[in-house]
Structures are given as C-alpha cells and as structure tokens.
Amino acid sequence: MIEVKEVTKYFGSFPAITDISFTVERGEIVGFLGPNGAGKSTTMKVITGFLPPSKGTATVAGYDIVSESLDARRHIGYLPETVPLYTEMTVREYLGYMGKIRGMSSDRIRSRTGDVIEICHLEDYYSSIIGKLSKGFRQRVGVAQAIIHEPDVLVLDEPTIGIDPIQVVETRQLIKDLGGEHTLIVSTHILPEVSQICERVIVIHEGQIVAIDEPQNLARTLVGSERVDLQVKGPQQEVLKELAGVDGVRDVSRINIERGEIPQYRVESELGEEIRASLAKAVVDAGWELHRLNAVVMSLEEIFLRLTTEEDDGGGEVAG
Amino acid sequence: MNTFNIAWKETKSYFGTPAAYVVGAMFLALTGVFFVAEITSPFAEASVRGIVDWAGFFIIFLAPLLTMRLLAEEQKLGTLELLLTSPVSDWEVVLGKYIASLLILLAILSVTFYYALLLYVFGSPDTGPVLSGYLGLILYGAAALAIGLLGSSLSSNQIVAAVVGIAILLMLSFVNRIGDLVSGIAEQIVNGMSMTERIADFSRGVIDTSSVVYFLSLAAVFIFLTIRSLETRRWR
Ligand SMILES: Nc1ncnc2c1ncn2[C@@H]1O[C@H](COP(=O)(O)OP(=O)(O)OP(=O)(O)O)[C@@H](O)[C@H]1O
Ligand SMILES: [Mg+2]
Image 1: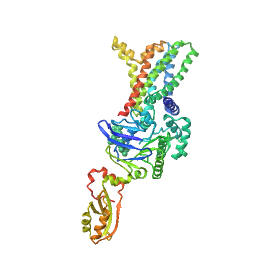
Image 2: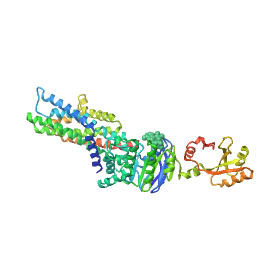
Image 3: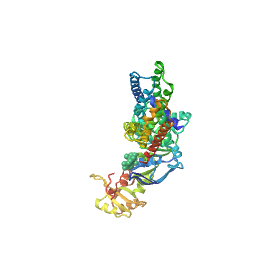
Image 4: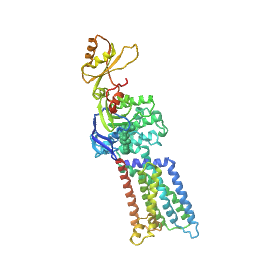
C-alpha cells in the first residue's frame, strides 16, 4: 500500500531524513517511533505529498507521490502534527468542506459525516465552532477530517499529543479500530503507545531508520541479546564468576542489593542460545539453591535508549 | 469544481467575518468623503472622475487588505498542509481564492454606484465615462487583487502579506512619477507601466484596448506567480 524507497529530504543542506526505505501492507498499523527531531514528521510529509523528496521515490496505493500526486492524494487521509482547523467554522461545516475538496458528493458527505461523528464521539459538538473546542476535541475533529473520505491510507502525526489521559486511551482505541479498514501510519514518541497500537514499529533516529520490527521482537533482534533474571542463594562473588563462565553469557550483574534478601542476578546472553538450562545446571552443579529463573522482556523504553544513545551501549547496568 | 468549492468557502467566510466589513466600510467612507469634496468644489462637474480616481487610489490599500488573509492564514493555521495534500491542484487553490476576493471587491464597488446614481439625480453626467470608469475600476481591482494574493502567499503573517501587496501596488501605480524625470522611450515605457496613468484614461471615457490587456495580463501574471510561490513553498 505504501512503498518508500531510499528517500532523502534536505532542508537547505541539512538532511532531515536520509535513505529511508520501508513498505506497509494493506490493513497494517505501523508506528513511527523516534525522539524529537528524528524526522518522523518529515517522512510523513513526504508520504502525503506535501514535501517532495530530494532523492528517492514514494508510492501510495500504487501511485507515485510526485508524478501522480493527485491520484495518490485521493487515497490518503492525513492528520498533520499541528492539527489544522479552520477555527471559525463549525465541526459540520469543516467536515463538509474537507469532504468536498476531496471530491465527495453532497449525499455521501451527509451520510459519512454522521458516521464519522459517531466514530470520533463528537455527537455533542456537531454544531460547535471549532475555535471554542478543547484541545482533545479538536484532535478528534482532526481525525474525523482524515477519515471522512474513507481513504485507504491514514497518516496520523502524533494523534495523542496534548490530550488528557482518559482521552488518550479513547483515542488509542479509536486508532486501533480504524486499523481494520485503513492502512495506518502513526507517529509518536510515547513508547507504550507503540506497543499498544502498532503491529510493526519503525524506529527513526537522526533521520535514519535504525529498526523495523514487531514491538515484542524489537528487543531480541535489535539489541542482539537476551536477558535472564535469576535468584541464587550462594556467595555473591563466586556466583557472579560462575554465571559469567557459562557459554554464551555476555554480562552478569547484581540487581538487588537489599540485605536479607536472596540475591538476584541479571544475565545477558547471545541471541538464540538456550541459555536457561545451562545457567540452571551451573548453579545446581555448584551446590547453590536456585530460587527463581526467568527470561526478561526488555521494555521499549530501554530498547529505545539503547538504540538511540550510542555512547551508552557498553552493557552497563540499566536500571530495571 | 474544486475551484468553485474553494471560492464558495472563501466568499462565505468573507461575509461571516468582520474584517471584510470593516475594510469595505473604510473604503466607502474614504471614497465618499473625497467624492463629496470633489462635487462641492467650485468647478465641480457632474462626472464620476472623482469617484473613479479616488476609488482607484484607495484600491491600492483595499485589495491587499482583502486578500491578505487568503493564503497567509492557511499557512498560519497549518490548513495549507491539508489543502495541498488533498486532491486539489495548486492552481485550483489560488484561482478559487482569487475569485472569492473578486466577488467581494465587486460587492464593495457596487455600493459606490450609489454616488453615480446621485449624479444622475442631481445632474446629467455622460453615461459613457460612467460605464468606462467602472470598467476601469474593475480591471484595476482585478489586477490589484492578484498582486495582493501574491503577497499573501509569501508570508504566514497577514500584516506582512498586506504590506508586500501595498508596496508592489504603490510602485506600479506611481512609476509614472519617474516618467517626469526621464524622456523619450523611457518615459513612454514608464508611463505604460503605471496603473494610475491607465485608469485615468478610463475615467475620461476612453477605453484603450491596450489598457484592458495591460490590466488583464497584470492579473494573470500575478496569479501565475502566486501559484509558483505556492509550489516553491513545498520545496523549501
Ligand atoms: N521546514 C523545515 N526547515 C528546516 N528544517 C526543518 C524543517 N522541518 C523540519 N526540519 C528539521 O528536520 C529535522 C526533522 O524534523 P521532524 O519535524 O521531521 O522531526 P520529528 O521526528 O517529527 O520530531 P518531533 O517529535 O519533535 O515532532 C529536525 O532537525 C528539524 O529541525
Ligand atoms: Mg513531528
């Protein structure tokens, strides 16, 4: 549905994004994740045809975004970062106008407006002046205009920014529901959001893609290590030494330091090794008590920090 | 179709917001004052020359004030991003907005017709110059609005947009002052470029085809420049 090939975008001589390539299949929900200034919005502006790429190509629904721009744009619904609203219009007028300039007939606009209002829970604000709505409701109006013409592709730039936690939950649900019919690209720098909404994550950092994967796989494939936590009753220094000696183990560290408790250790190992059995064996062979042993799924926050803070990747202690 | 939709939306928003009324009222008040001054002067004649000349002068300010919002506000609100990612061509956006501003200008100018009616009630003006004078005003206005629209495309700040438009219009209107300093071909060129020289002909009852072409091409050129300016906004 969306195909981006080696897209680079310069602002002056500054490359906001470099060599971005990815594809999105029909019906997929893909998240763009990255810190401020990573190039998420710039990528979206290229996909939606607002900014032409300096290099590379992008197609949406099979149409080139530059040479067949109007055709491509017909298939896109877009919510830019700064929710663009005509503040003096009512919600109804605004949706009607957006429908019109996307080539909808008056009849279709009428029936579709009803649906969209329901989907976005705007029933009580149908005739309100947009300028008088709260931020959260403006955001919903923004989403409503993006879906009014039932586009195949929906591009939402930080759809949950600046709205209260309850509305955030609702908006996320709304986005998930939209995923059924539309192909979705959602950008965010809020990590849990990505794992909640998206089937696939594209991590962008300093204008480049550093990872594309399913949220739960990011840890494994990206960081290139697996983690196991274990609780062992035994002399600390020796336990540390013993665990470090197991084949495939990269790093071992103590993770609790409270007195009286049974010490816990965190082991980082190579990917794909069946390390848990070997660890258990090592502990038991040494004659210590193994109280607990479990694999740890890295949180997205950690992955993110690892991916984006180059200087800090020497495998030091990451607070759990 | 898109052009029509955009023109319709803009026309409605002219009537829905106070700005156009305020600007229009000022324009009418100023032209009214100068009209009265003109016909109560000792050598007054029953002609629309006073209205046309003064209205022409004030259009230099009226047109950019009417057009300043059209593209500047879209840039400021971010709605231009929506418009330009919708299946709408850049020229449809520009033309739609231009048409809306033209309609409002015609509405405002039609109110000044009241002065002309007064002339008919209290005197017997030549109908020829009345009609040609208004034709001239409309053509002049059409060119001025295109210039104002270019200003609006250049900035997201409405004030800046208006100032740019007014500056271009002042230059184009009064280049004939340079004409007084030069002579020969240069003088002719400079006078030919001047909008005031041209409008003066119309108010005397002379419809010069070259002047009609001049105003229309001025409008076309500036509409074209506005479209280009919108296109290059994407490349920046
Ligand atoms: N119009 C522009 N002119 C010049 N530089 C720009 C422009 N737009 C973006 N940039 C630069 O490009 C880089 C990427 O910006 P972009 O807006 O894509 O980041 P982002 O990932 O969306 O960040 P955020 O999370 O803050 O929205 C930034 O360094 C920004 O300063
Ligand atoms: Mg952004």
